[in-house]
Structure formats: structure tokens, C-alpha cells
Image (cartoon, rainbow, N blue to C red; front, side, top):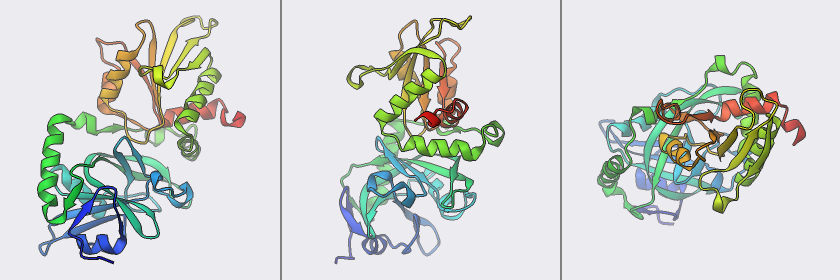
Length: 331
């Protein structure tokens, strides 16, 4: 076995020993920083157990996921509230300095697939269940996966990372509003309770995208909408569902509702809201439904004073609708 690697190739597999020797890391941990003699950060390896690794949800209390070349990664600490300190905090150094973040996903038996270099997009707190099933506050990191260059020499990683981040921040810049995520605090989720909300969210994440759309159809019907239909994927143009307000509603009878439905873990930003608005029928009211969260910029865009407003239903509020209507009791 070659433990003297000098580079990593995207989509190639490596043993834990190969990774730790090549990058001069500790043997264990999901976040493994490498520092020089002065304790300055050289690079970090982010070791994920994402869903595409084939591991069961019960084996992956971190609930990581890869969506559209975005890795959603739960910080280190399997039990209790997580703190943004130590190794978790070291990831934030990439905001100010182009620290190389090497992304790996565990495919079993101490073998990892190299994802590419990672770009930290945003970090934020949310509620999750820990490995014992207890509700706690965690920190989520969202990384853009850069699959080019395909081969990353360890000695050149800092230069490559600097080039990637510089180009990305020109072509796809994120301001503070797009980095900040709107989540609901304890006071907004006491009814229904946090445990019930998180239990529902876990079940929603277990749906396939098709099953999730069909479930939202049931949610809309149980919420009083009529003539609910799911559009064909090849013809939706950004619209996933159509529905109408029941004629018995004195104020909004007959109102046409169009929805975009995303079973996502990564946050919805303002570009997604803009694209959805552009796909709406001119006479329709839009609602964006997601299992994740919205950025502050997305929330502001949805309520733009000179544009048609978009209703936002994030994972927490969606879970509340499901619980109030006792929908899982019929599924």
C-alpha cells in the first residue's frame, strides 16, 4: 500500500492511513486540521459520511448530504449542543484566508472517496437529534465542491485553493445576507415541540424527491386546497405543484397557488426565489416549500416591495403543518 501520496484525484478512493500520512493529520475525527510548527493552519480534511456513501441513516447521526455539488456537513460533536470552537471554528478561517479544505466521503471500511477541494459558503445553527435521540443545537456548514482541477497536488493545494476561491467569489459572490440563514428559535417551535418537529423533518428527508412531491400534494389537500396537481418533471418550468383555494374561503376563493418543492438540506438563496418568481403564472400566488431553511437575502427577496410576494415554508414550519393536520397518521 502506498502511504507516500503526493496528490489526490477526484473520485478516486484512499485509505484512512493514506490520507493522514499525505496530509499530516491526526488519525481520527471528522474535521482534521494540519498545522505547522507555529500552529498556523496549513489545510483541513473534512471527512463526511454523506448519504451518497450508502451508509444507513442510523449509522450517520451527522445527517450529511451532497446536493448539486454542495456538501451539507454537521459540525463535530455527536451528543449535546455543539459549540463553534476548536476544530469546528478552524473551518471558518477560510472566509478570510484561502485555506485548502480537502473533502472526503466515507464509503466504508476506513476507505474514502476524494470529492475535491471545498469552498465554505455559509455556516449556521439548527436543531437536530443527536446519536441518542435527544434534541440539541448543532452547527451546519455548507461547502461548494470544486471538482476541478481533477488532480490536486498536496504541495500546490494552497495556490490552487486561492485561485478557485478568487474566481468563485467573482462569478458567484455571496454577501452577508446570502450567507446568513433564517432559522426559528425555541420560542417559535414550542408548539408543536422541538422533538416532534425534528422527528417529522427526519421522516421527510427519507422520502425520494418524487415521494416528497406526492406528500406535499397531500399536505396541500389537507390544508384546504382543491384541484391539487403535481407537474411533470420535464414540463414544470420551475413549478412543481398547482392548487386552488376552496370556494368556501370568503376572501381568497379560487386563488391559484403554484409551488416549488425542494427536499433540500442546503439553504435556499435569493437566486432560487427570483427564478421561481419568473416561472409563476402572472395570476398565481407563489409558495416555496423546502425541508431546509432560507437565507436572509431570500426572505428579503420574497417580500420585495415592488415585486409579487412569495410565501416561504421552511422545514420547521412545514413540520408544524404536518403535525397540526395529523398527516403522517394517514400515510
